[in-house]
Length: 349
View: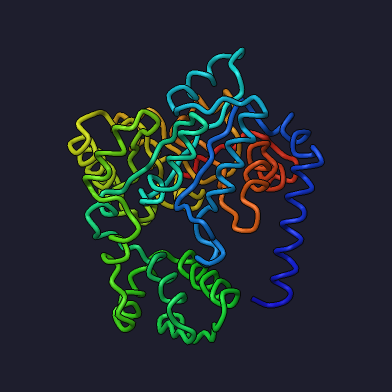
């Protein structure tokens, strides 16, 4: 990581803390905070820095739930959130969501949820459970963690990364390269093979298996949601394929858990990768809601399109609690729109 990147990161962290502790975030929230917020997490860890900035520090998660309780917000299920959006007298709320079905959701996050009495929805792709998903993000992280010299042939780049900071920066650049074109995920297979990296083995270490999924679903604070079969960017698939990918995931989860699965999260739910076509398919398959990764809080207007709900990322290795607090009050929506429309709507054709 260059000096400029370190300085930029430090300024960001200090800015988040200033917004949180000065009360400025609450002021922004009077306009951008809406009735509630959906928070997004993935993996949890004791030390995200050591994991190359991947996952949420469990202490930050605990602090965020504590903040929600102290500030008078209820932590509710998705069904309760939809009901409250329709009630002008409803109390402010937050919803917790975890993507992908990591084992740390059970081992680290669940005990914190129990202490706070906080429910959460875990969105699970079929292929995470059966270990066939192309978990390229796990492969890249493992590659940089285990080696100081890394060549990624499809990128035409060789990285010298002898310490955590340089490994983190290299992983960030490689991930950005994938995000520029998700077809590139397939190009990484030879790189992983050449370095002896087994994605199924990494998934065995990181993700819930079928029996663990059944067991955690029985917990009164946990609801399992759908996340697609293959965890591919849906906008890259023809409409029939999108329908089949989501429908098969719903059938798998409902057969495995022996109950209805009513809520969905789009893999890669950014505006450029998710839109009205995908929302129509999710609606037609009988879901009650679907969440994106578009930052923003929840307003009554979102009941007009509950299949493209905004969601605030709450993971930031430096200070996840301050990051989450700013998201809870709609700070990032205000920044993204430069003080524009508080209501985040996604309707890409």
